[in-house]
Structures are given as C-alpha cells and as structure tokens.
Length: 163
Image (tube, rainbow, N blue to C red; front, side, top):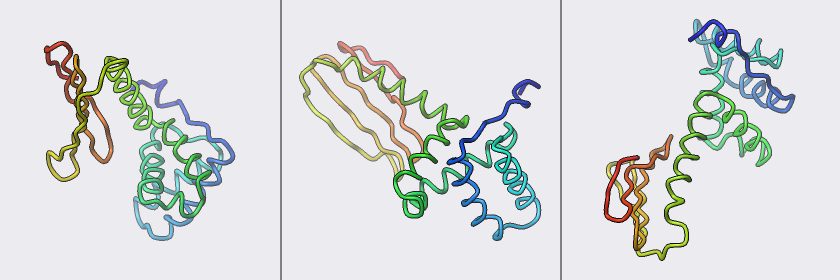
C-alpha cells in the first residue's frame, strides 16, 4: 500500500456514524486486550467521522456482521439496513463486490432479446451454488457463494469461456 493510500480516509455521514457507534457500543464491552484496543481505535475514528484505511477491515467486519445476521434490519429497520449497506459499499470489499456485480450484469447482456430455453440452480457443495441461464445462442453460469457472485462460465454460439 502506498503512503498516499495509508493517509486516505473514509468520511462518514452523520447517519453512518450514529449507526456504527451503536454497533460499537454493543461490541466493545464483549472484547478485551488487543481486539478491544483495535475496535476502540475504530470508535475514536468514527467519533471524528473519519476512518483511516488501516481501520477499514474492522469497519467492514462490523457492517458485515450487522447486515448478514439481520441485526441491522431488526434494530434499525429498513432505513438503517440501507445506510449500513451503502457504507459497506464504500469499503474495499464493498467496492470489489460492486465491481463483480457490474461484470456479471455485463456478461448477462448477451442474453438480452433471446428466447429462454432453461434456467437451473444447482449445488456444487454446501454454500456454493450455480445458477445457469440458457438461451438459443448462449449459456451463462453464475457461481453463488455466501459472500460473492461470480461468472463461472459463458458460452456464446457454442464457444465456451470462463469468466
């Protein structure tokens, strides 16, 4: 990571700050030692509405936990869930996921206007599923895991390729 990247910060909105502070208030009492110190550093940064890059993995983990467990929706309703989702999208993992979804949508464009032949969902193993869409001219298979969706393969006009 360059020195410039280390100095960059993620600026929080007041709504984001309030929700992250609430999540940290629930988490901090359960932590001790180095983990507590690390999350206290995040809490201090959040108080200033400015999270430096080195603390983003902690912020990502905190938002993922609130979102994946349903805690965000349960405690903060749909609006709080939306705010935390938007915050997650600003983090490196969130940006990577957004980029991946854009690539998938780009790949799916080859199916536009074609007659659908079949749609299938399959399980490769627990937690890893595939979603296949077949038209008269193309077959696209997406790989779906708990934390990602990726293009597994594309076949257009009989020629297969990996995404």
